[in-house]
Length: 221
Image (cartoon, rainbow, N blue to C red; front, top):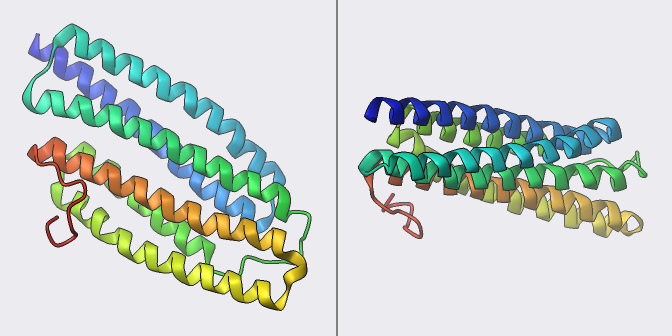
């Protein structure tokens, strides 16, 4: 029974890893589509979001089957719970990538108005957070999960700086406020994705240690 359970969990984790890679790509492509005003790329991200939604449902169904069939306990149960929560968070991240791509449809109408902050750096940070937290999950690396939690503060600061830069551009060019509103959305969405990566990291810490660290201070983590 235990052998079958562990094989089922390993398969589930592999499927989650594939899903995470697709979500990370969606974040990258969504940001690029807005930065470059690439409508075709934006449409691909939105289409991919629907596919990720279906994968999320199938993965959840499989996890619930394992729960009912094997009734895991201890670390095996925590792995299963973590998979369910991470799966849900990844689906929400994909939704946010889709939201970025929808902004592209608006900004593409004003080709001369550029993103007033370094969106690609913010995107790179959130993608790194997603990549590291999934690696922490697969490798059961609690220190890497903690690093992801600590890295969220840097992203928060970059978001504040981005908002300030957008407001400064609005004052100089109020005619294009609708476009700048989309760039505000981009900054806030990227920061929100970082929050989800942090949530996943906290779930990984719980999975490994059994300790709930949600709502804890950074020093406590």
